[in-house]
Length: 112
Length: 113
Image (tube, rainbow over all chains, first blue to last red; front, top):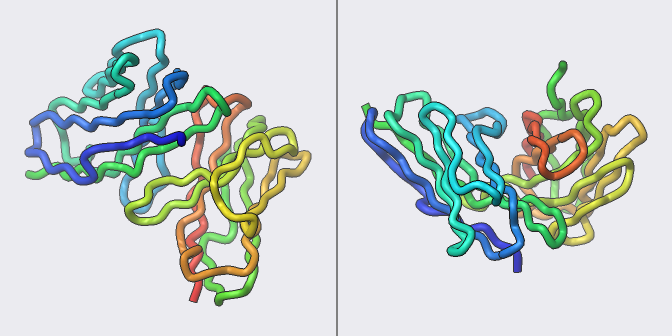
């Protein structure tokens, strides 16, 4: 069935280092992949998204890469800061029924 | 613009009861989606409404239902509550199609005793 798998479930990185979160999807026709950030006690918010006609997209310290052949996409955060601590969700738009399916989330801890 | 609002913010119910949650989308947004959030399970898609019609549905039992009104406000109903229904229920609104950014509400925290 339709599925988006996300790894790791928890990630701790030293402040200033980079963090990478990876996701795979099952529907080969998927063509839209947003990433949401949810800070503790707050609502999820879109931070970046990518469509299948590009392989990479950057926005300041955040970048997302997409490999359609392998059906996986990744979020890269460089020069991490304390305010990056949050849960990050990847998602994929399943083309066959236009459903957005979310991964189970990655809790990112930025260590001082 | 005002953001997405949800009422109530907190609810405590007992098993077997039913509950109705409400979501008011951002003005001009016609799509409203509902998600169940539990620890370790992420955001599980319940259903999406667009122009008063259910456009998509997730893999939840028939006890979970919803509707959308002509002003795009949406309600979600859960009947015959079970302990496992305890969760944060989030709604999200977007302009019209799934490629648009979804704006989430603050959620309704439902506790079933």
